[in-house]
Length: 114
Length: 112
Image (spheres, each protein chain N blue to C red):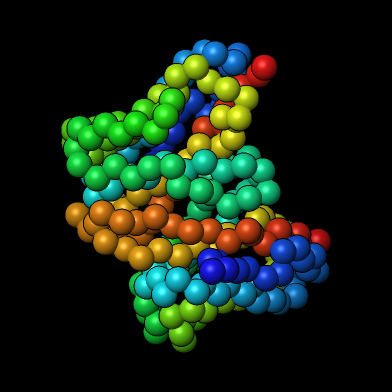
């Protein structure tokens, strides 16, 4: 199994450009998440989804949008990129119960906005 | 506002020493997890603790969940250079919440 796959791995954007970070998982997990990680820091939740058709904001949603049309895919859209969005973005998925909340992470997308 | 706080932020020790890192919150968590992240990789789960007061051991690592389910600790015995990395606690706040949030992490460096 591939697990969680993110593309691209690296991207440089100019200020004001837009892009979509792709995330797909093949574990049939109901929950999916997008996090950003700034240098030397922990992970901040951007958006999450509890199932197809349902999304909700996390801690830092401004400047981002998501959709969840299928169980497998959870793309993250950046509109009007800003230097403050320079970060490493991680997508994760999990099958959630009270006793089983292990999140599986992709390899990350390193984004630089110049 | 950070739901989960971790201390210390940085820790540099010699091989063979023991250490404890802490994860604290003012909120109750239905479960807490510890992850380890290496440079250029995503976090990988070490353990999940669910019951207040629970203690779990993973070789030289001992994890404890506070009685009130608001805090957790990770103790490493006889640290080795291979333990170097970013240790993150994470959890689902509330009785059975939706969010899955991370603490800021403790960056551990074990020197040979």
